[in-house]
Image (cartoon, rainbow, N blue to C red; front, side):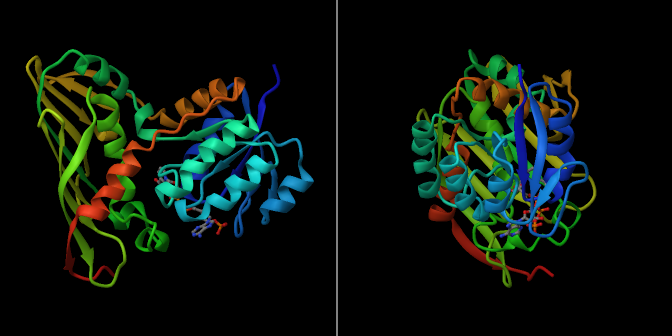
Length: 307
Ligand code: NAP
C-alpha cells in the first residue's frame, strides 16, 4: 500500500515539535513538502507559496494546516479544489461559520477533512470515557493553568482576534471534557479577564451544566508560574476520577491507573490514515462552540496589561 503524501503548512512550534516526528513514525503517511512564508524543513521540498507548491507537486495527497486558526480557510478551500485531504490543527477555525461549509466541500470532493483535537488522543482519555459511561456524575472541575510566557514566547497571534488567548490551551481541556462526559454540556455563565492592552483573554472562569443540571466548573489561567496544572476532576457515584498532566495520567480514588506517554500526535496521524482510506471526515465542533459561547455570554473585565 502506498503512503499518503503530506505537506505541512505553517512551519512553527507545533509543526516542528510534534507533526514532523509523528508523521515520520507513522506507517501509511509520509512527509513530502512544507509550505511556510519564513521557514523551511530540512529533507523535504520547501515552498513559501501554497499555490506554487500545489502546482509543483501534484503528487501531494494531503495538507496538514499548522498555521494559527485565522490563516487556514483559503488553504483548505484551495486544497479541496485540488483534490487533497485536509488536516486541521486545533482549534479548527477562526469562526464556526467558516468551518461548516468545509465539511460539505470535503464530501463533494470525496476527500477527508479531519479537525484534530490532539488532547483527545492522550492516554487517559479513552479509559476515562469508558469508566464514566455507566457512572452517575455529581460534578466535574477543570483546572487548566499555565505560564503563557513559557509556552507561547513571541507568539503575537494568540493575543489578536481569533487567537483565542487563554482558550488556546483551554480548548484542549474542553476537548477532553466533551469526550469523556456521557452527556453534552452547555455554558451557563463565564467571566473573562482581558489584559488592558490585548484583544484576547488571559484568564476565564466558566460554569457549564448538562441538561440534568450536573455542574461542570472550569478555570483557565495563563498567569501560573511554577508547577503547571492541567487537571480534570470528576466526582461520580462510583468514585473520584482525575485526569492530570493534560491527559497523560488517570487516577481513580487516588490510585494511578494510567501513566501515559506523549503520544497524542502519532494517534492523530494513525486516525487520519484510517479516515483517508475511505475519504471519511471527522469534524467535531463541540469544543469550539463552547468557546464561541464563552465569548458570547461572558462578562468581561479589564486586568493588568500584559507585556
Ligand atoms: P507558531 O509557532 O506561531 O507557528 C505557526 C506558523 O504559521 C508560523 O510560524 C507562521 O510561519 C505560520 N503562519 C501563517 N500564517 C500566519 C499568521 N497569519 N500569523 C502567524 N503565523 C502564521 O504557532 P504554533 O504554536 O505552532 O501553533 C499553531 C497551531 O497549532 C495553533 O492553532 C495552536 O493552537 C496549535 N497547537 C500549538 C501547540 C503548541 O504547543 N505550540 C500545541 C498544540 C496545538 P511562517 O511565518 O513561516 O508562514
